[in-house]
Every structure is written in C-alpha cells, then in structure tokens.
Image 1 (cartoon, chains in turn red, green):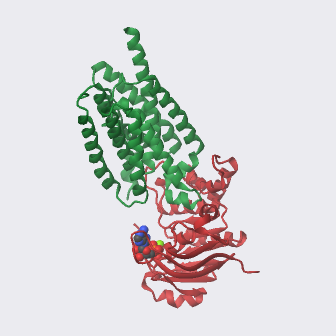
Image 2 (cartoon, rainbow over the protein chains, first blue to last red):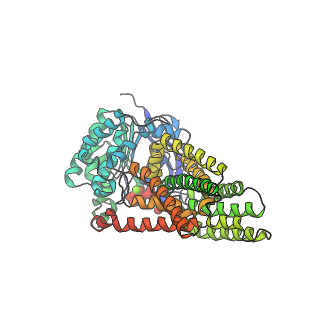
Image 3 (cartoon, rainbow over the protein chains, first blue to last red):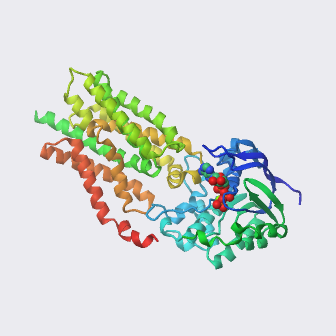
Length: 252
Length: 275
Ligand SMILES: Nc1ncnc2c1ncn2[C@@H]1O[C@H](COP(=O)(O)OP(=O)(O)OP(=O)(O)O)[C@@H](O)[C@H]1O
Ligand SMILES: [Mg+2]
C-alpha cells in the first residue's frame, strides 16, 4: 500500500496563552493513512496539547501543521468536519438540558450545511453510532445523569457518528469497566481498519497499547522521545511510574 | 380620557408581551453560553447610555444602544478569551456604568428627577410609544428567525464551545450575534423595566425554566413564555397597587424563580446524583 501522509507536523511548538514555556516543542511527526498510533507519556507531558494542535484548536506558536495536505490553521473548519475528537475527561453536570442523542447528533453538525437542520438520515446515523457502542438505550436519557463511563461512550458515539476520516481520542477508555475496556478498543481498531481511518489514541493503559497498534509515540516533557513499535516502547513505558497504572487513582 | 388611557394600556401590554418574550428567549442563550457577565455589563451600559440620552435631550434609545454595544465591544473579547474571570468583569464594570449613569442624570439640572429620569431608572408603562412597539416587533421577528435558522450552531455552542469548534463550527460569529442581539433587546426593553432592573428579566426566566427541563428545545420554548407571563403579571400588579412597573415585574419574576426552586425535581434528586 502506498504511504500517504495524512497528518504532518514540522518543527511545531505550542505555547498556551499567558505561558512562556511551550507545552510541546520542536515536534516533527508524520502520520500516514490507516496508521493507528498510540500516544503515551506521563501527566503534563503534552499529549492533550499535541492532539489539540493537530486538530487546530490550539494554534502552533512555531512550525506548521498540515492535515490532508492543508494548513490546519487556515482550513480548520473544513478539516475538523472530518476529525472525530474525544476530549479527555469530558463530563456533563447533572441537570444540564441535553439528552444523549442530542450530544451524539452534534457530531454530525459539521456535515449539515449552514441554515440547515439535521435530517432523518443524520438522526439515523447518530442512532447507529450509539448502537455500535452498545448504548442505544441511553438515547433519550439526560447526558448529565449518565455515569462517567456511559458519558465516555456517548462521546465516542459522537465522534463515530461524524463518519470521520481521522480519529483523535484522548484517554477515551479511562472510565470504562473491564468488559468495555476489552470490547470498545477492539471495536475502534476494527472500525479503523474497515474504514481506512487514521487514528491517534492517548492512553495510560499498556495493554491497549500492546494489543491494538503498530506504532507508539512517547511524549515526555513536551517532546517526542520515542517513536516505534509497541514492543520497543514497552521497557520505556514500564519503567515510568506514571504510566504503568490504569489511572485508578484518578477515579472519583 | 378613558380612551387615551386605554391606548396607553394597550401599548404597555403589548410592550410587556414583546419585551418579556424576547428577554426570556435571548436570556437562555446568554445564560447557557456563559455570557452572563457580558449581559450584565451591557444592561447597565444601556442604562448609562440612556441616562446620557436623557441628560443631553437626545434619543435615549440611540445612546443606550451605543453604550450597550460599546460595552460589548470592550468586554466581549476579554470575556471571550477568559482573560478575566466573569466576576471580576462584572464587579468592575457595574459600578463604572452606575457612576456614569448617575453623573449623566445629575448633569441635566433642568431635567432633575423628572419623569424621563425616573423612566430610565425604574421604567414606566406610559413611556411606550408606537415606534417603540414597532422596534420591538421587528426585533421579535429577527430574533425568532435567527434562533430558528442557526439553532443547531447555537445549540452546539451552548453545550460546549470548544467541542463545537472541534466539530467544524466557527463559533465566534454566533457568539457575537447573540451578544449583539442581547444588547439590542436590552436597550429596547429598558424603557419598560428601567436600567436598574432590566438584567433580572434576562436572567430569571431562563434560570426558572432550567430548574425543570432536561431538554434544551423545551427550555427555549418555555423561557420566553415564562418571561412574557411575568412581565404581564408584573404590569397588572403595578397598575393595581400603583407601584413602579419595573419593580413589580422583577418581584414577580423572582417569586416565580423561588417557587421553581422549591418545586424543582432536579434539586430534589440532586443529592442522589452527586457522589
Ligand atoms: N490551558 C492551559 N494553560 C496553560 N498551560 C496549560 C494548559 N493546559 C495544559 N497546560 C500545560 O501544558 C503542559 C502539557 O499539558 P497537557 O494537558 O498536554 O498534558 P498531558 O500529557 O495531556 O497530561 P495528562 O496525562 O495529565 O492528561 C502541562 O505542563 C500543563 O500544565
Ligand atoms: Mg491530557
């Protein structure tokens, strides 16, 4: 298969507003079509910053990010319609007036033209995505009244309802129970292969990393310190105290 | 005489219906887009502007609008980038607008505490002119059209602005559209309720309805209706007891909110929901 670069980063540094130290610096990275990349690294190393620089939510201070060969800062709106993004630790508070199906349907908004309303087809695609994740029974429940894991599944369904060409998932499995932790990453891997996606997944879970991908990027202190196969990455990751646990201590 | 009073009453009633509806509707977006600081600042900016209009014997609507938009232009980008906390913004801008308003009002010695000044402060039902009603009606049509046509963008932004961006929506124009509409609606409703109290009308109906509904579509339909009901009830209370109409409207709308708080199923279940 010919290698086609989907995401490229050239000497990219991102500085948050009001900060002087870049959160990621000097990143050079190319991710080709149909690559499934796991991004690992300790807390505050810059993983989330990396993903949000890729989809253009954060403007790079230096360097250039291109997606599908286009500058993300100039074509962000168009490109983001093709990127399914699951943010880290996204939680809706109880009492907020949004139903799960509303949230999933929002994933399709980028595809629906200006001044147009979602069609029956859009609604069906949203429902299909929920079915795929196994949460169709939650469709009419208020989002804020779902558990952390259920909300995480809704956010995944939202990303999939978009029918994206790129998936950027930031610790998308952190709240899932052991059963789902087995099934959902498998499902993502399957979709990734079937639909020829390009996928970046941030995780602290080495088992997922070992089982589901062929490329691992380790981010430490805002830099890419390793880029290779999961087997090569294993000793690096295992030695790191932050990365070995399943993030249990983060659960509230 | 009776006929004249009837015409005044009729205008006041229509004014209350339109202003209550509009403030209730736009309030949902202001509250859910976390624009409360801007809404609050614009309300008192419009008040200061209207005071300047009275003092200089120009059109208080025009100066009110000027001040409201000026406030939005200065505060908007600051709040937008979260450079300052919302509380900081409101606690700095509110006293400034009040100080300006009082300076303007006293700068007009021959006007003194005349009826026009009182109108700007607490609102008045006799102040509604036919052109005010025309403005409000136009605004009513424009706001409904905006909400209908760009509902999905507004809905996504209310849910989460960053996620809306991540889904390919350019959020900035929509946020500023709401800020602009809010500024205009506030200014045109000012005469009725008065600059000191207008903000309550923006905030209370939305907050009331949000105590009950878990479906945003229902919130957007119910909030303007609640806004309308409270302004109309406030109007009749004010006529009956011969009290300032703005105060009556705000008291009614606060009572409605209080009752909603007591009855809200959300509150009662809240303890179970939170860990
Ligand atoms: N909004 C922000 N403003 C300023 N600095 C920030 C902001 N968000 C993150 N940072 C800083 O940028 C660096 C990288 O943060 P980032 O969130 O990318 O880390 P991460 O690898 O995703 O961490 P975690 O594993 O905890 O999710 C950290 O030093 C963090 O303090
Ligand atoms: Mg992170």
